[in-house]
Image (cartoon, rainbow, N blue to C red; front, side, top):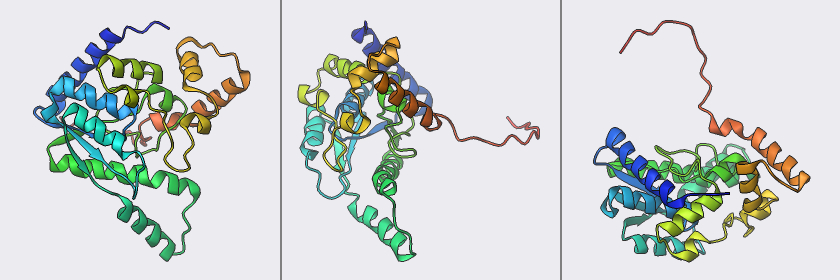
Length: 250
């Protein structure tokens, strides 16, 4: 798979710059910083496009975060303004209030609640600091639905949604970001399992399949196809009933 990293890096930087000219002239880019490759690359791209003074990093641990040092390292490396907002009290409060009315949060609820609180927090910061929220998802994760609807799957602009994991890493190295952050093994933050453990296949295998349609392991192909089909709704706008009544304004 040939990937012209220099051309694509320059192109996405220009795209970010143009997007802000049209949709937030003079606004700041607000990025949730996890310490992994995606948020690191998005922050790096925004710094190159807008200047580091217009990029704001937000760290949002849910209580103790064992690898928050990676997030702090990224912010220091880029020299960006940053804030740490712990979401644990908010998370615990929602769970407690659900239980008080007789609702027991499911495992899926507990998994997805934190990303949704983090996105609400990002928008609170953004609206307080003249910002626009960056989405940090990549094509590989989106392809198999490895994101939380109305959590990390949303934002105001998305620089990486059409790049695979391998391509995102290449862009990170092109930007000169810390090697260990670009190559950091993604972990779910829940039980210490890697993303690839949870998915059942490697990102390298998935990326090759996305770009070439080639895959040797037919069980993995069936799993990828099943996940892709089941999660396509996450990539679509909310369905709207068309009334058929004419609209004449503007």
